[in-house]
Image (cartoon, rainbow, N blue to C red; front, side, top):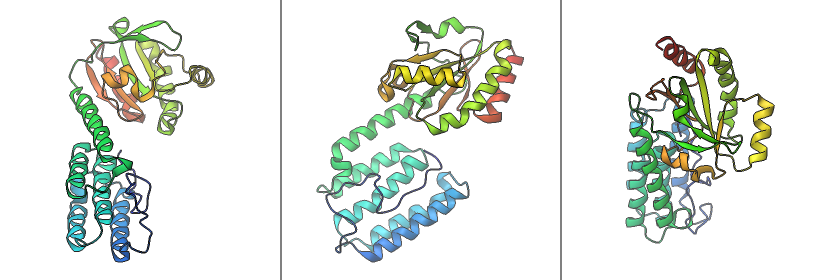
Length: 278
C-alpha cells in the first residue's frame, strides 16, 4: 500500500527463514548497507514519492547488493530480495513483480521459507494478484456489476434499487484507521447531498454485527450497510477485487463508474459534478 515505510532487514514483514538474522553469522557489513538503502527509500516516501521511477536507483542498488554479497548465506540474500518484493507490493502497488521475486527466491534458495512456507506465501500473493486484476478491470467508464446481498439489518440490499441516484460504494471496517479518518468527510458529503439524490452503500468487513451496529449508531451513519461477517473473505470483497481499506466506487445514475477511491475534497467535487449532470 502506498506510503508505507519499509521496516528494514530485521523487521517482521515477510521474514521467516529459520534463522535469526541478528546472529553472529549474519554479515554485518551487509546489514549496514541494507539499513542505509532502506533509510534512503523511506526518506523518499517521507517526501511523498510513490512512483516506480522515483526508486529506479534503489532497485539498481538491490541488484548491486546481491552481486556484492553473492557469497552470503541464502537467508541473507533472500532478505535482500524480500525487501525488494516489499517495495513492489506494499509501497508501489505492484504485487505481480513481488510475486516474481518470491518465485525467484524459491528457485535460488529452496531451503529458505518465506513466512514459514514459501509455497503458501506464493499462493497467497497469487490470490492478491488475482484480486488486483479484478479491481483494475473495474475502471472509470465501465459498468459496475450489480449485487444483491444482506444488510446489517438482515434485510435484502440490492444496487438496482438505487438506479437513477449517484451512489458511493464504500468498503470499510470499524477497525480500519484510514476509514475512521475519512468518516467525517463521508458524513459531510452525505449530509450535503443526500437530499439531491446522493446515497452511500457501505460494505463492512467487520465480523461482529453488534459492534458494527453500535458504531453506526454512535457515528450517525444512517446509510445502508452490507454485512456478511466474513471480513476479507466476504462475497462482495472477492467479487470486486477489494484488497485495501477504504476502497470506494462512485457510480452515476446508470451504474457507471465515475470515480474510484475519491476522498476529501475530491469526493465532494465528484459527487457535485455527478449530481449536476443528472
